[in-house]
Structure formats: C-alpha cells, structure tokens
Length: 142
Image 1 (cartoon, rainbow, N blue to C red):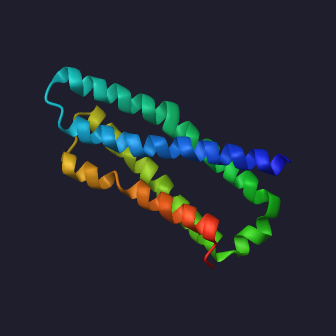
Image 2 (tube, rainbow, N blue to C red; image 1 turned 30 degrees about the vertical axis):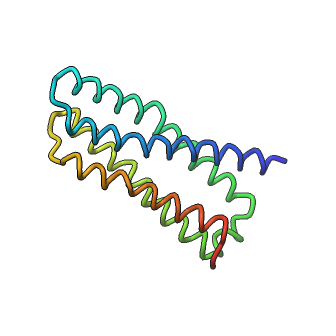
C-alpha cells in the first residue's frame, strides 16, 4: 500500500512542477514585452513567487518521491534502459529549472537580453521533456 501512496505523491508533485515550468517561461514572454515600471515590478513578483513558492518545492517533492519510489526496486530500475534514459531527461529538466532561475534573476536585475520570441521557443522545452518522460514510463520501449 505504501508504494501506491508514494506513486500518487510523485505524480501530484510532478504535475505541480510541470505546471510551474509551463507558466514561468510564459511570464517571461509577457515580461519581455512589459513597457512600464508597474508591469515590470508585477512580473518580477509573480515570477519570484511562482519559482520559490511552487516550482522549487514541487521539484524537490518530485525528486524525493521519485527516489523513494525507485527504492522499492532499485536494482530493477537501474538495470532498465528506459529508466536510465528517464533519469537523463530528469537531469535535463532540473537544468531547465535552474536556467529559469538564471533568467528570472536577469529580469530581477533589469538585465534581460532575450526577446519575447526567444521565451516562446524556450517555453516549449518542458513540453518535449514531459512527452518523452511519460512515453518512457508508460511504454517502457527498452
């Protein structure tokens, strides 16, 4: 029974993490086009609260519950090719998370150098990672 609870908590935290990773770059799109100080400050606040209050705690929870879940059959998971690929994609996702932090800090310092078009493309990366991770976990192609 414990495994099912850990799996449920892993999925819930994963959904929250991805929701934040979908929304934060969308805020960057709008922030990059903000033309006045009030909008600029509003976006800075929204980005900071989303990153610190949702994205990072959800990432930590996802990793904790994922590790816990894998601990139920560590040797099995580590031997599976699909799981090794999933871990590599999760590492990329963590890198994306911290890249969002770096971009947010640039906005906070008034040093953004990217256009809204850059952020529109940047916003697509977590979608591709989500699709690949879900396919690997559900289909287990190798």
